[in-house]
Amino acid sequence: MNKNNKNPFAQSKVYWKVKFIIPAAAAGTADNSFDDLALAVSGFETDEANGIWTFELLFGDVPDITEIKQRLMVISMLHEVPTPEAVVEKIEQQDWLSQVARNFPPLTIGRFYIHGSHVEEPPPHGAIAIKVDAGAAFGSGEHGTTRCCLEALDWLARSRSFRNILDMGCGSGVLAIAAAKLWKTDVLAVDIDPVAVRVTKDNVRENREQVWVEAAVSDGYASERLKRAGRGGRYDLIISNILARPLVKFAPDLYNHLLPGGAAVLSGLLTSQETMVLSAHLMQGLKLKKRFTHNEWCTLVLER
Image (cartoon, rainbow, N blue to C red; front, side, top):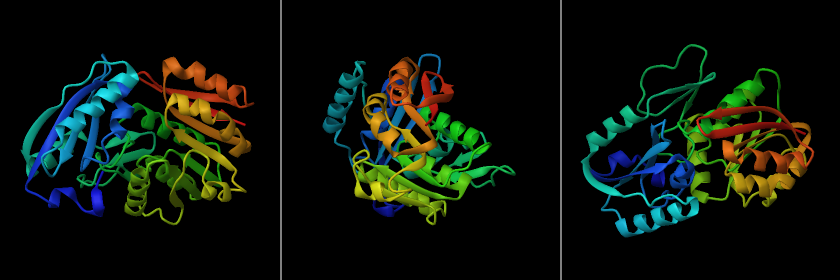
Protein backbone atom coordinates (compact mmCIF):
# COMPACT_ATOMS: atom_id res chain seq x y z
CA MET A 1 0.00 0.00 0.00
CA ASN A 2 1.29 3.44 -0.92
CA LYS A 3 0.00 5.96 1.61
CA ASN A 4 -0.93 9.56 0.82
CA ASN A 5 -0.36 8.93 -2.91
CA LYS A 6 3.38 9.37 -2.37
CA ASN A 7 6.27 7.11 -3.16
CA PRO A 8 7.21 5.59 0.22
CA PHE A 9 10.77 5.06 -0.96
CA ALA A 10 11.23 8.84 -1.25
CA GLN A 11 10.24 9.55 2.35
CA SER A 12 13.20 8.21 4.28
CA LYS A 13 16.64 6.73 3.84
CA VAL A 14 16.05 4.21 6.62
CA TYR A 15 13.19 1.72 6.87
CA TRP A 16 12.10 -1.14 9.05
CA LYS A 17 11.01 -4.49 7.69
CA VAL A 18 8.88 -7.01 9.59
CA LYS A 19 9.05 -10.52 8.18
CA PHE A 20 6.99 -13.61 9.01
CA ILE A 21 6.02 -16.90 7.38
CA ILE A 22 2.49 -18.33 7.35
CA PRO A 23 0.60 -21.28 5.82
CA ALA A 24 -1.09 -20.63 2.48
CA ALA A 25 -4.55 -21.07 4.00
CA ALA A 26 -4.02 -17.86 6.00
CA ALA A 27 -2.18 -15.90 3.30
CA GLY A 28 -5.22 -14.00 2.07
CA THR A 29 -6.12 -12.80 5.56
CA ALA A 30 -2.51 -11.83 6.29
CA ASP A 31 -2.33 -9.84 3.07
CA ASN A 32 -5.33 -7.75 4.16
CA SER A 33 -4.45 -7.30 7.84
CA PHE A 34 -1.70 -4.69 7.82
CA ASP A 35 -2.68 -2.10 5.21
CA ASP A 36 -3.39 0.53 7.85
CA LEU A 37 -0.02 0.00 9.58
CA ALA A 38 2.58 -0.55 6.87
CA LEU A 39 3.77 1.47 3.91
CA ALA A 40 3.83 -1.72 1.87
CA VAL A 41 2.69 -5.33 2.32
CA SER A 42 4.32 -7.98 0.13
CA GLY A 43 3.53 -11.69 0.18
CA PHE A 44 5.30 -14.41 -1.78
CA GLU A 45 4.92 -18.18 -1.96
CA THR A 46 8.34 -19.41 -0.84
CA ASP A 47 7.65 -23.14 -0.36
CA GLU A 48 5.09 -24.44 -2.86
CA ALA A 49 5.40 -28.07 -1.76
CA ASN A 50 4.51 -27.27 1.85
CA GLY A 51 2.19 -24.33 1.16
CA ILE A 52 4.31 -21.70 2.92
CA TRP A 53 4.13 -17.96 2.25
CA THR A 54 6.59 -15.29 3.38
CA PHE A 55 5.29 -11.81 4.16
CA GLU A 56 7.30 -8.62 4.50
CA LEU A 57 5.89 -5.37 5.91
CA LEU A 58 7.68 -2.09 5.21
CA PHE A 59 7.64 0.78 7.73
CA GLY A 60 9.05 4.30 7.59
CA ASP A 61 9.21 4.45 11.41
CA VAL A 62 9.87 1.92 14.14
CA PRO A 63 6.94 -0.53 13.88
CA ASP A 64 4.52 -1.27 16.72
CA ILE A 65 5.57 -4.88 17.18
CA THR A 66 2.98 -5.45 19.93
CA GLU A 67 0.15 -4.53 17.56
CA ILE A 68 1.66 -6.68 14.80
CA LYS A 69 1.90 -9.69 17.13
CA GLN A 70 -1.71 -9.22 18.23
CA ARG A 71 -2.90 -9.22 14.64
CA LEU A 72 -0.83 -12.30 13.84
CA MET A 73 -2.43 -14.03 16.81
CA VAL A 74 -5.90 -13.20 15.50
CA ILE A 75 -4.98 -14.57 12.05
CA SER A 76 -3.67 -17.78 13.62
CA MET A 77 -6.87 -18.21 15.63
CA LEU A 78 -9.09 -17.61 12.59
CA HIS A 79 -7.30 -20.24 10.52
CA GLU A 80 -6.24 -22.56 13.37
CA VAL A 81 -2.55 -22.35 12.50
CA PRO A 82 0.50 -21.63 14.71
CA THR A 83 1.09 -17.95 15.44
CA PRO A 84 3.88 -16.71 13.14
CA GLU A 85 7.01 -15.20 14.63
CA ALA A 86 7.61 -11.60 13.53
CA VAL A 87 11.23 -10.67 12.81
CA VAL A 88 12.13 -6.96 12.70
CA GLU A 89 15.03 -5.68 10.58
CA LYS A 90 16.35 -2.16 9.99
CA ILE A 91 17.19 -1.69 6.31
CA GLU A 92 18.52 0.92 3.94
CA GLN A 93 16.34 2.34 1.16
CA GLN A 94 18.30 0.86 -1.73
CA ASP A 95 18.27 -2.57 -0.11
CA TRP A 96 14.47 -2.54 -0.07
CA LEU A 97 14.15 -1.38 -3.66
CA SER A 98 16.48 -4.13 -4.82
CA GLN A 99 14.56 -6.69 -2.82
CA VAL A 100 11.21 -5.66 -4.31
CA ALA A 101 12.70 -6.03 -7.78
CA ARG A 102 13.99 -9.51 -6.94
CA ASN A 103 10.87 -10.76 -5.20
CA PHE A 104 8.28 -9.31 -7.55
CA PRO A 105 9.40 -10.14 -11.08
CA PRO A 106 6.95 -9.66 -13.95
CA LEU A 107 4.27 -12.33 -14.20
CA THR A 108 2.79 -13.70 -17.40
CA ILE A 109 -0.69 -15.10 -16.79
CA GLY A 110 -2.56 -15.99 -19.97
CA ARG A 111 -2.37 -12.84 -22.08
CA PHE A 112 -1.71 -10.67 -19.05
CA TYR A 113 1.69 -9.26 -18.14
CA ILE A 114 1.63 -8.08 -14.51
CA HIS A 115 4.58 -5.92 -13.49
CA GLY A 116 5.68 -3.42 -10.87
CA SER A 117 6.86 0.13 -11.46
CA HIS A 118 10.47 -1.04 -11.01
CA VAL A 119 10.28 -3.02 -14.29
CA GLU A 120 11.78 -0.99 -17.14
CA GLU A 121 11.74 -3.44 -20.06
CA PRO A 122 8.70 -3.31 -22.37
CA PRO A 123 6.03 -6.03 -22.12
CA PRO A 124 6.06 -8.93 -24.59
CA HIS A 125 4.46 -8.25 -27.95
CA GLY A 126 0.70 -8.70 -27.81
CA ALA A 127 0.57 -8.91 -24.00
CA ILE A 128 -1.99 -7.02 -21.91
CA ALA A 129 0.19 -5.10 -19.48
CA ILE A 130 -1.04 -4.17 -15.99
CA LYS A 131 1.15 -2.18 -13.61
CA VAL A 132 0.59 -3.08 -9.95
CA ASP A 133 3.29 -2.73 -7.32
CA ALA A 134 3.85 -5.66 -4.98
CA GLY A 135 2.89 -3.67 -1.90
CA ALA A 136 -0.23 -2.07 -3.31
CA ALA A 137 -2.87 -4.32 -1.73
CA PHE A 138 -4.07 -7.89 -1.84
CA GLY A 139 -4.10 -9.06 -5.45
CA SER A 140 -1.01 -8.22 -7.43
CA GLY A 141 -1.09 -11.49 -9.36
CA GLU A 142 1.32 -13.63 -7.37
CA HIS A 143 -1.40 -15.16 -5.20
CA GLY A 144 -3.11 -18.29 -6.54
CA THR A 145 -6.59 -16.77 -6.32
CA THR A 146 -5.69 -13.70 -8.38
CA ARG A 147 -3.78 -15.85 -10.87
CA CYS A 148 -6.76 -18.15 -11.43
CA CYS A 149 -9.14 -15.19 -11.78
CA LEU A 150 -6.95 -13.70 -14.49
CA GLU A 151 -6.86 -17.06 -16.27
CA ALA A 152 -10.65 -17.25 -16.01
CA LEU A 153 -11.12 -13.74 -17.43
CA ASP A 154 -8.74 -14.53 -20.29
CA TRP A 155 -10.70 -17.73 -21.01
CA LEU A 156 -14.04 -15.91 -20.97
CA ALA A 157 -12.77 -13.16 -23.27
CA ARG A 158 -11.97 -15.67 -25.99
CA SER A 159 -15.65 -16.47 -26.53
CA ARG A 160 -17.77 -13.85 -24.77
CA SER A 161 -18.24 -10.11 -24.44
CA PHE A 162 -19.71 -8.20 -21.51
CA ARG A 163 -21.14 -4.69 -21.13
CA ASN A 164 -21.73 -4.28 -17.39
CA ILE A 165 -19.14 -5.71 -14.99
CA LEU A 166 -18.96 -5.76 -11.19
CA ASP A 167 -15.79 -6.54 -9.24
CA MET A 168 -17.03 -7.45 -5.74
CA GLY A 169 -14.16 -7.16 -3.24
CA CYS A 170 -11.74 -5.39 -5.58
CA GLY A 171 -8.62 -5.40 -3.36
CA SER A 172 -5.89 -3.80 -5.47
CA GLY A 173 -8.21 -3.40 -8.47
CA VAL A 174 -6.12 -5.66 -10.70
CA LEU A 175 -9.13 -7.74 -11.79
CA ALA A 176 -11.25 -4.68 -12.54
CA ILE A 177 -8.38 -3.26 -14.60
CA ALA A 178 -7.96 -6.59 -16.39
CA ALA A 179 -11.68 -6.68 -17.23
CA ALA A 180 -11.58 -3.10 -18.53
CA LYS A 181 -8.60 -3.88 -20.75
CA LEU A 182 -10.27 -7.01 -22.13
CA TRP A 183 -13.74 -5.64 -22.86
CA LYS A 184 -13.41 -1.82 -22.84
CA THR A 185 -16.69 -1.45 -20.97
CA ASP A 186 -17.99 -0.12 -17.66
CA VAL A 187 -16.59 -1.81 -14.57
CA LEU A 188 -17.71 -1.01 -11.02
CA ALA A 189 -15.11 -2.08 -8.45
CA VAL A 190 -16.30 -2.18 -4.83
CA ASP A 191 -14.78 -3.17 -1.50
CA ILE A 192 -15.80 -2.87 2.14
CA ASP A 193 -12.30 -1.52 2.92
CA PRO A 194 -11.81 2.19 2.06
CA VAL A 195 -8.05 1.59 1.80
CA ALA A 196 -8.59 -1.01 -0.91
CA VAL A 197 -10.87 1.40 -2.78
CA ARG A 198 -8.23 4.14 -2.60
CA VAL A 199 -5.54 1.74 -3.83
CA THR A 200 -7.82 0.61 -6.66
CA LYS A 201 -8.36 4.22 -7.73
CA ASP A 202 -4.58 4.79 -7.72
CA ASN A 203 -3.97 1.68 -9.81
CA VAL A 204 -6.78 2.53 -12.23
CA ARG A 205 -5.18 5.94 -12.84
CA GLU A 206 -1.74 4.35 -13.18
CA ASN A 207 -3.10 2.02 -15.86
CA ARG A 208 -5.13 4.80 -17.56
CA GLU A 209 -8.45 3.00 -17.24
CA GLN A 210 -10.40 5.83 -15.52
CA VAL A 211 -12.81 5.98 -18.46
CA TRP A 212 -14.03 2.45 -17.74
CA VAL A 213 -13.41 1.70 -14.05
CA GLU A 214 -15.15 3.32 -11.08
CA ALA A 215 -14.26 2.34 -7.50
CA ALA A 216 -16.56 2.74 -4.51
CA VAL A 217 -16.97 1.53 -0.94
CA SER A 218 -19.72 -1.06 -0.47
CA ASP A 219 -20.61 -3.48 2.30
CA GLY A 220 -21.24 -6.44 0.06
CA TYR A 221 -24.09 -5.71 -2.36
CA ALA A 222 -25.67 -3.09 -0.09
CA SER A 223 -24.47 0.24 -1.54
CA GLU A 224 -26.80 2.45 -3.51
CA ARG A 225 -24.08 3.02 -6.12
CA LEU A 226 -23.95 -0.69 -6.84
CA LYS A 227 -27.74 -0.82 -7.14
CA ARG A 228 -27.76 2.08 -9.62
CA ALA A 229 -24.89 0.90 -11.83
CA GLY A 230 -25.07 -1.79 -14.49
CA ARG A 231 -28.55 -2.38 -15.86
CA GLY A 232 -30.64 -1.36 -12.86
CA GLY A 233 -28.13 -2.88 -10.47
CA ARG A 234 -27.70 -6.05 -12.53
CA TYR A 235 -24.54 -7.12 -14.33
CA ASP A 236 -23.64 -9.61 -17.03
CA LEU A 237 -20.30 -10.40 -15.35
CA ILE A 238 -19.60 -10.46 -11.61
CA ILE A 239 -16.08 -11.10 -10.35
CA SER A 240 -15.80 -11.93 -6.65
CA ASN A 241 -12.38 -12.84 -5.29
CA ILE A 242 -13.05 -12.76 -1.55
CA LEU A 243 -13.27 -15.74 0.83
CA ALA A 244 -15.33 -18.93 0.88
CA ARG A 245 -17.82 -18.09 3.63
CA PRO A 246 -18.66 -14.60 2.31
CA LEU A 247 -19.13 -16.18 -1.14
CA VAL A 248 -21.67 -18.59 0.35
CA LYS A 249 -23.40 -15.77 2.23
CA PHE A 250 -23.60 -13.60 -0.90
CA ALA A 251 -24.85 -16.38 -3.23
CA PRO A 252 -28.49 -15.11 -3.26
CA ASP A 253 -27.30 -11.51 -3.78
CA LEU A 254 -25.03 -12.56 -6.62
CA TYR A 255 -27.89 -14.38 -8.34
CA ASN A 256 -30.21 -11.39 -7.94
CA HIS A 257 -27.62 -8.98 -9.37
CA LEU A 258 -26.56 -11.25 -12.26
CA LEU A 259 -28.41 -10.86 -15.54
CA PRO A 260 -29.85 -13.97 -17.21
CA GLY A 261 -27.07 -15.54 -19.28
CA GLY A 262 -24.49 -13.67 -17.21
CA ALA A 263 -21.28 -15.17 -15.86
CA ALA A 264 -19.67 -15.09 -12.42
CA VAL A 265 -16.03 -15.67 -11.51
CA LEU A 266 -15.73 -16.77 -7.86
CA SER A 267 -12.42 -17.10 -6.07
CA GLY A 268 -10.68 -16.85 -2.71
CA LEU A 269 -11.55 -20.44 -1.83
CA LEU A 270 -9.46 -23.51 -1.20
CA THR A 271 -10.12 -26.67 -3.19
CA SER A 272 -11.39 -28.19 0.07
CA GLN A 273 -14.07 -25.44 0.18
CA GLU A 274 -15.16 -25.84 -3.44
CA THR A 275 -18.14 -28.11 -2.71
CA MET A 276 -19.49 -25.71 -0.08
CA VAL A 277 -19.25 -22.67 -2.35
CA LEU A 278 -20.48 -24.44 -5.47
CA SER A 279 -23.47 -25.98 -3.70
CA ALA A 280 -24.61 -22.58 -2.42
CA HIS A 281 -24.66 -21.22 -5.97
CA LEU A 282 -26.14 -24.30 -7.63
CA MET A 283 -29.04 -23.98 -5.20
CA GLN A 284 -29.65 -20.49 -6.62
CA GLY A 285 -29.88 -21.89 -10.14
CA LEU A 286 -26.38 -21.15 -11.42
CA LYS A 287 -24.43 -23.70 -13.46
CA LEU A 288 -20.72 -24.54 -13.34
CA LYS A 289 -18.96 -23.80 -16.64
CA LYS A 290 -15.29 -24.20 -15.75
CA ARG A 291 -12.88 -24.37 -12.82
CA PHE A 292 -9.28 -23.22 -12.48
CA THR A 293 -6.85 -24.35 -9.79
CA HIS A 294 -3.42 -23.29 -8.59
CA ASN A 295 -1.90 -25.31 -5.77
CA GLU A 296 -4.67 -25.50 -3.15
CA TRP A 297 -6.65 -22.52 -4.50
CA CYS A 298 -9.70 -22.80 -6.72
CA THR A 299 -11.65 -20.44 -8.99
CA LEU A 300 -15.11 -21.23 -10.34
CA VAL A 301 -16.76 -19.85 -13.47
CA LEU A 302 -20.55 -20.03 -13.20
CA GLU A 303 -23.40 -18.99 -15.46
CA ARG A 304 -26.97 -17.96 -14.81
